[in-house]
Length: 483
Image (cartoon, rainbow, N blue to C red; front, side, top):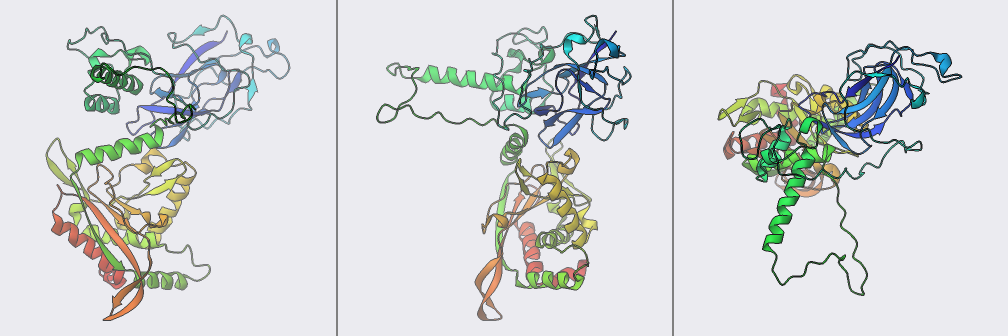
């Protein structure tokens, strides 16, 4: 007799509370091995393959590709236990794995059991007397036989449930008591829009209030306000807007803010709302820096190792500047009203990928030379391009370097990567007329801009930091004091 076990979306770490289903790796009827990846999900930080801790036959899947699930929501059910292979005939063999599970939930931390060859067992052949091991969960999403293997990246999110005005967890409107919310993001969103969470009934498991519930409440509040302020003489028409000639106007495209794009939007909004930032900038003659880089790479010879990049040299300059101006390698503890100066430099660098903007972090950059920093930047950049960065590789930065010159622009006013205190922006390096040694000459010029948290320092410190960086760019020998 088989036993049906329910596998729920595990805690993926780093404070993540939800994930989007990108691609199912198994279908109903497939035989899975212990710790075999069954679904690929996208969190606000990275793409993750989630392994199932049970071995057996997949009997149901919950959630369509493109939908979001909170941590703890059911992912799939698996019928585990020995089954008579002869009752299935031919290639439809029973699962060979033991009825237990590994208890592991992340790829790379499993038991090491080899992945089973993908097999299909028709659900009706699983014992009808299988005893569920958990309480009945939400109704599984029907999976057609010819379901596509990969949904569009921008598949529309499911329509959120209507927001009834009622109690939560037995609480009556307006009364004190626990609110079924686990996501800090949901709480912050509700505060920003004056939404009373006690008046919402969540659509998640056990009444859990999801982001979709708050979004729905915001829309309802906006529609109510608009209706209340609409002039009485204005007709309310359900017809589609028209343009000249009577043709229907095309509908506006709506793109959900979720995954990496949603995380970037939330972080940038928080930075702008919480950090009183200021920006200063300077043009610098990078001719000597480019010459020094060429000499370094030439000295390494054809087989002397990887070339040193301009970004690596700028990163090394940043670590030296932060050693002189530690105020900018800090964060602000608003609750304690304290500035926290951090002991080490974990240098983030902005990287544009197909999934959006990400900021990988070079750990302990203050202990590395230019070659070591360059090698780590190259490694992390490749992981970013392939979507294989882990959440730990995208968090914990103390200062960010943003090279927007790769987009062909000269200057910018960067937004600080919250909760850091500063970001250095670097424009393109290009030939420009420049006064050099009292004469007009064509030199390689770059614009440097520093955006800083005015709470941690004043303009004198920020200007000193930026001037030191510019001096190192113009005269790389200045760095010899710190090498």
